Image (cartoon, rainbow, N blue to C red; front, side):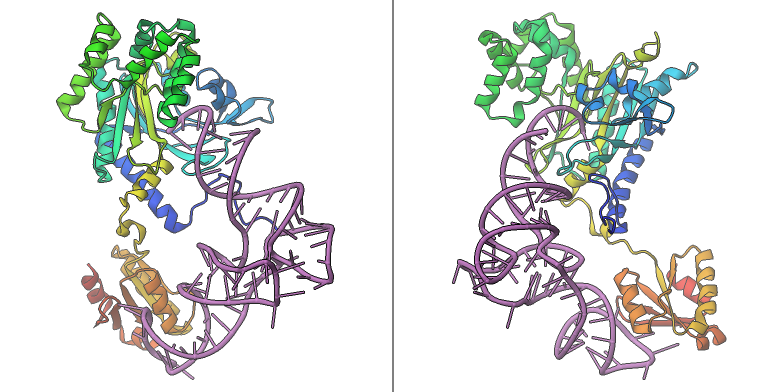
Length: 431
RNA sequence: GUGGGUGUAGUUCAGUUGGUAGAGCCCCUGAUUGUGGUUCAGGUGGUCGCCGGUUCAAGCCCGGUCACCCACCCCA
């Protein structure tokens, strides 16, 4: 029986032509982070199960995880996300000067059924500010997110950064008459609003409110609010400090100018550890309905590791979902997709010339030129085809005659012209 | 875990009421034995996902199974 030619379901392997695109995306993300003064970190792929059981969403550590018992009898998990590891790293650094701005590009694992934009092994870009309670941290993080979209030339018309606040919503729900014990269910119902038909959603919400139709109607009104200046809303929330914070944050966003950011009370996010401002980045078109990015403030994440209370704000961004988004809007240029593997191809006329070709290749490489030499041993015509297929613009032909004379012909494949000269002259020509 | 769809050449896909397995692209050879893209001529390549059933005869019908895709759940 022969082995399968496919990798395990949901595990990613990338051919060079695919990897090139991923690298372009990840390098752009890194550049944007570094530009805002963020530093890259990394953590272990395998973590103790308990690290996730405590704080992530319920399903994350349970049904949707790769977990097993290692040879030492420890319950371990292939990390489904990065934030708990980050919290531990920070908690362990007694001397760390806060705040810190860190980012990471970890491979994460979730055991769920693969679908579009969703696989079992995925890169999740993470960016966080830790140790600042100021709304300036939320602003900074959202500005980086906006900067990322700008770097990819994504116009603000094709995406939306919806934001809200957990604290505000908790307060607002109470004021709508939702019982405290039902708040979790109502949150989860609110989160589903965009995915359901209005009637069905209203029914679900009513259930979540424990059948209290008065409360349900108010929640519907709350979630439908589009402006913070809405009279009904300001009346409802008068005297609320959480609402005051939301208004303040809105002023910050307007002050700097973040056209993609829109206050959306319906945004609550699924992860349990978010406490304050939460936000997500959505594609406004129809093709990528999931959020590309989700984030927010968490106040007590490091609490797991002791008394130290560290507040943070950050987001996770799926590299694959982002890439799909960029591709559907044609934002990955042909120069990224078709980047040439080298600047010059050295065609070898006969095996006797291999040495000469190698010497020439080394000479050019020492000058910083990317050189591919033929290893196929096929006839020259085929070698030219090969160079052309790789998108390499120049071909230098090396045979025993050229080696003896020290003079080579270099053909420009785009216009067919031929340049003849010494290695130095060829170098100058290529520079 | 739930629901829907699709499995035919390396790839994208046709394949009529059941009657000899097809096309484009790719690849290989030649026209051109030291010069690519275009063109022309020719060629390689399939256990029709797998197992069973019906039939004189199955890519096609039936049952099962596996894989992949899409959606749900959850989330990036």
